[in-house]
Image (tube, rainbow, N blue to C red):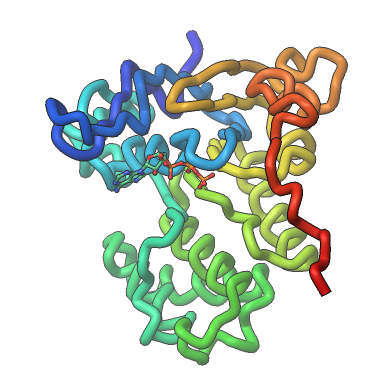
Length: 262
Ligand SMILES: Nc1ncnc2c1ncn2[C@@H]1O[C@H](COP(=O)(O)OP(=O)(O)OP(=O)(O)O)[C@@H](O)[C@H]1O
C-alpha cells in the first residue's frame, strides 16, 4: 500500500469576509497526494496559490475548509505529531536574524528537543556542507539572500524530518549555492525522505522532481509523474500549454513603449 507523505483533501483558503464581495478565494479546493520518498514540485504562475497551499499544509495558515495529513497525522488536529515529522523553509517568514548562523541552528535544535551535543555536531556538519562555516559566527541579518536560504535549509533539516517543504528555495540564489542546495536535497531524498518544493524554474523541477503538480487560479490543473505531465515536451512547454499563455498580440496597448520622444 502506498504510504503518503502528504495527503490534502479539499483545501480551501478564502481571505477577507466569506460573505462580502471582497472575499478572495486564493485556494479553491485542492486535493494532493504525495507518495513518501517523492521529490515533488509545485509549480504555477504568480498568484496561483502555491505559497498559500504550502502554508496550509505546514500548519502556518488555517484552511477555510479541507484537511491535511503528514504521514497519517492531521496537521490541524494533531499538530505536534505532524510537525515533528516535517521541516519547512517558508517564504518571507522572519528568522531570528540577530543570532549568528551557528547560534540560530543551535537554538532551533534545542527547540526540537535534541541534546546539545547532537545539535552542535549536526549544526557544524550542515554549516560545512552548505559552505557556511566561514560565516557561522556572523549575524544572519548580514547574510545574503542565498546564505539566508541555506541557513534556513539547515534549520529545516536539523531534526532530520521525514518530509521537507521548501517555498521557492532557489529564488535569488546564485548557481554555486543552487548547486549546493541541490546536492543536499538529492542526498536527503536518496535516503527515502520526501521533498516538496515550489518553484518557477521549470528546468530545475524537470531535472530534480519525479512528480509535479501544476496550480492555476487556486486549483490543481495537472498532477502526476513528470514524464506523463510532460508528454514528450519539455516541462516548460507543457506548463505553458496547460496553464495557457496569452495569444500573440493580446498584450495590446503599450504602443508608446520604446518610441522615444526625444
Ligand atoms: N494574506 C493574504 N490576504 C489576502 N490575499 C492573499 C493573502 N495571501 C495571498 N493572497 C492572495 O492569494 C492568491 C495566491 O497567492 P499565493 O502567494 O499563494 O500565490 P503564489 O502561487 O505563491 O504566487 P507567487 O508565485 O507570486 O509567489 C493571490 O491572489 C494573493 O494575492
